Amino acid sequence: MTMPILNVESISKHFGGFAALSDVSLAVAAGERLGIIGPNGSGKTTLINCISGALRCDVGTIIFYSQNVSRLAPHRRTRLGIARSFQIPRPFFSMSVAENIAVALEFAARGAAVTGDARTLLAQMRLADKADRKPAELTQVDLRKLELARALATQPRLLILDEVMAGLAATEVDEMLDIVMGVSQLGVAIIMIEHIMRAIMRFSERVVCLDAGRIVAEAAPAAIVQDKMVRRIYLGA
Amino acid sequence: MRGWGRFSVGASVVLFTALVLTRVAANEYFFFAGYVVLQFVVLATAWNILGGYAGYVNFGAGAFFAAGAYTAVALMKLFSAPLPIQLIAAMCVTGLMGFVIGAMTLRLRGIFFSIATVAVAVICETVVMNWSLVGGARGTTVLPPPPPEGFSSYARMLFVLMTAIALLAVTLARHIETSKIGRGLRALRDNEEAAESVGVPTLRLKLFAATASGALMGLAGAPFPLYMNFIEPTSAFSLNYAVSALAMPIIGGTQIWIGPVIGALLLASVQQIVTVTVSSELNVLIVGVLLVVFVVAAPNGIVGLAQKLHKRWQRR
Image (tube, rainbow over all chains, first blue to last red; front, side, top):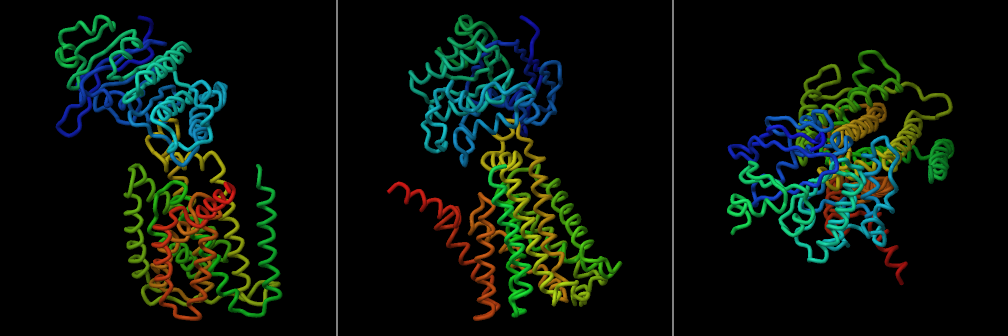
């Protein structure tokens, strides 16, 4: 593997007496596509909350481009190039779709020239005709696209997707996958949490399986579905 | 910036009109009542910077107002400080108050800030009650200096001053609203975690809004002792300020600077009229009833209602 851009070094996170993450280590290379699977409550969302800064890990360090970001506020991590989507879309409801993107462009653009305005980004997401709508008028799949577009507007070097395809129809899943693969081709590293195995298999170069706050398996997608532990705790076969 | 030209022309016209009125209007009561209405424009606009744009409700507007007033009184008693110094000092004191309360509570989301503002109101009133320099619970008399050159009474001068302060407050609010800060505040009001995830420095913006809002409330209160010639804690910390400061923006509309202005002009005028024609006890009741009606029937205020009707009209 090339030099990792993200190094998660034995982090733990407790909520009261409950260990949501214990001693988790993870590395992501530049441009890599990493899938994360695991049963509900296994710590997937906690892990990305710790990486993005929505939560602070209790112990351990998170290194992003040789900088320790473990104690940085989330907006600072975004400006360094860590972007995320939320499992349940969290649009800015009082703003139009285009304004949602504009906020991200305005606050997170990191020095470098903004790679196109809100409209071009929306065109990439096939949302251009809805630029002036309010989020409340959008369908589920469009809300997911908006969530993704807003994360991309921050010009990330690492994009973390928390179940962007949950609840979508099969054709919509394919459409989202196409978009995500397109982002990957721009050189952005992507961590994707997903329960839809078909999507994980097509997307990932490497898959990590979490269970009860620990990484229990790590392999190429073809190998992970053969893993006995993964089959027992997650795939149920 | 687009729209600023028209805005500054409007502001100049308002200030000029106020000046002309002090020359031509004979009825002294007009300035007395007009001052109060304008003072509420400042309070409502100030409240809206944090409460409307950022969504953090301040229940202690009365405390900020009174802190401004008592800062002025203390400076007069201690140093016979002139009015401009009183205004600047009041702004600094209440701006700092906003910043400190914010720094203690705005790291947390939700209602902690609101609870703290209630506590601060109680603390401030207790301090003033027991501070003999500013008159304690009995209050103290403040004699205004002779009216400055060109004004036939001190009340007329204060009327023009409050007009200028109101214009300053509205200009600042409008500037915040249309700037990057305003867009950041709007994002964090909609969803704070999402705002952080797109790089909005939420804590810094909230602290800025709390400071600006507090400073303007103090500025609204600073000329109050000279206006009344007398100050005592019960009227300075009156519930009416806290309730009105939040009811006026909500009734007018919190999304845009004109909302609190409309709400304040309307409600404060009604209050003044009712005080004279019916009874001075009805004030808070009227505000309360209107607040309930608007929260239920028109949650986006008069401005929101007008926009809705305008849209419906266009569709025909």
